[in-house]
View 1 (cartoon, rainbow, N blue to C red):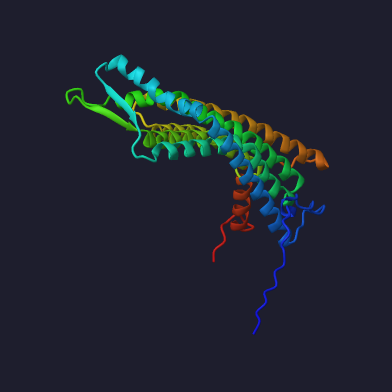
View 2: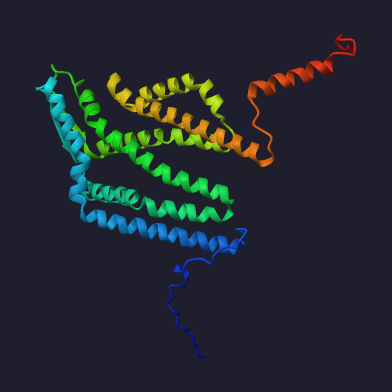
Length: 313
């Protein structure tokens, strides 16, 4: 009995890398078109991150010096008040140098390629948005990236002082050597930078709540003192050192950004009021206190009888 196997040669093509077809005028797409576009966007994101990580791996030595510079600067600051302090930055494990190099290159590649993958995220969701929503989503993406990098830069600046203060708690009488693991130090550094970066996104979040009508400017002004107090409490919890200077370096910029977001909210509310008035010549913007008083008057009118007495059941 003869056994024959038919083999069909497969053709290699890159058609799956082609950009998806443009959506209809109303933004409607079928399920398979959504999946095809999602695959294309994910592939572009992965390629961009991998390419940026490979390039950053070439400059791994420079990145390593950039990330460890705050530690050595912190040691110089600590020795001003504690000349007896002994500190060393160490690696533990035979594979640690290679894994640390890969982690640094991957993190740097993610940051460097952020404009590409942020644009891909925006391009994936924009077909289903209205014209006004498209404009605001582009503004959010454009403003979120600089604010996040501003927060990261602020964390990088205050990191040496924060570490120097923490290191000075080493007991002077014990004659100890503070061995700082590089893995732990980089993890601490990344967490602090992410906290600062997200903290600088709070004003943008406030403005977007105002744009969608959830948080009017008058409410921001009413609760401004509570918001600023919350900023200081968050800064006190987020900063790793007990000194007030480090806390103020985070709290004061956040407070300034919150005040700026309040100014922008007032400008947006005035613009909404003008648009409502220009549409039919009548001002439709309603003050919250006046609306509440009008509602209370209507309730009183329903409860009062024709003779001014309250209705009884």
